Length: 425
View 1 (cartoon, rainbow, N blue to C red):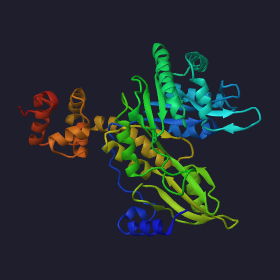
View 2 (cartoon, rainbow, N blue to C red):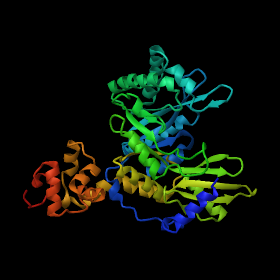
View 3 (cartoon, rainbow, N blue to C red):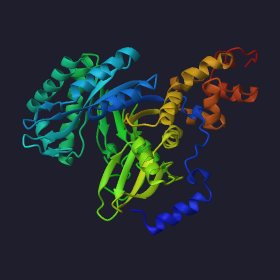
View 4 (cartoon, rainbow, N blue to C red):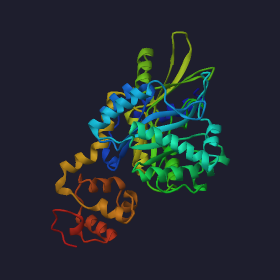
């Protein structure tokens, strides 16, 4: 629960941050997200709401259907709602041309009804030998082929340290097989994993979770804050390829006294606040909303959750650190305002390009050829990243002096960088 020290800090912070006073939305500059590539999960237990939410956001890079599990014989297993979830997602995929990945997670469902979540011993058995790895890969391919998924995502968590070399070898072998079929492989990584100590293979797309700062394992607090996001992005920089940061919608409620937690969607949290007649406050360090309430039995709960402002703040921090590839856990139970924000953010670049063709340029293509991020180019030019972002997407026409600096850094004549200009180099 919230300690006296935490409450005093938040109250003092509220005196200086207007967003902490009540649920008022600050202005969101979507140009900072102009390079956003967005994917999202839909779960089998909430697939109808998830599909409806996903339908409100156009322009997704891809989507993941969560999840396939394991049975008592270590074989892949679908729960009852999975077939319907796949059918619903397939329909949306066809309408929107969204590639679909199957997510497999190491939850073990035993015949007696027992569920072992994130079973490390299961993974140890599956990857122990070349023969067991091949058998597991064959089992995976059977489901990928039968349900015609465009890609695969592996979400194996809580792995024993001694099993990591075999797991990494499994990733390599699985990637080779899938690549031969033209199917991408995504691999979920936990933020506490020391990825810099291991030689992860090139080829797969690595997705690092950035939403377990607080949860069922901790006292009340936000799923992430600015500092946590920055640490995760810095750790991701040691991975090969172009990794993805995973953020999370929704939140948790914590019951005072027994530490019991419950997962909430954004709409769940908003409904609780409305029923209890309390006004959620915003925590400046995370952008998250929080409140306390009492239920009909007199039990007290603390709720922390995210809304559109929260997601914007996390995405903005991530983008400032050079990470604009985002996956969202998870669609379903999201407020209309949050879905509208996501749709605008995902499609901002296309809109800006259409509205500002007269300011179009080749900056992005040229800096990528030089392996420069926006932040790195902005620093060399001597302007802010936000300013460079606006110049790149055509929302702002730079001065002749700034054009010359960009030209010098990119080592190209101004006329080859900017369109519709009569300024010579």
